[in-house]
Length: 103
Image (cartoon, rainbow, N blue to C red):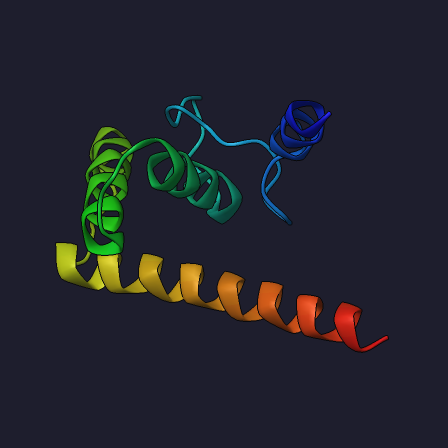
């Protein structure tokens, strides 16, 4: 029974993100949603630090932006923004969890 509950929680995906992405694909530029879904895929499937995951995700994003010939910021600025997005998601998830427990 525990295996069934574990399977159901994994199949629902990440809160507010949904299913994770093994790669960023498509002809349009990736949205923040797609970027975080890819970030969480690397977070769950690889044993890397947040810095390394943000760096790998940034490398994938830079490929899209290069194809579109969009000027980009320095890598460390993109990594910092991605880590901030992840931090905001964590804070929001913690707030929802705290409100749910208190009710």
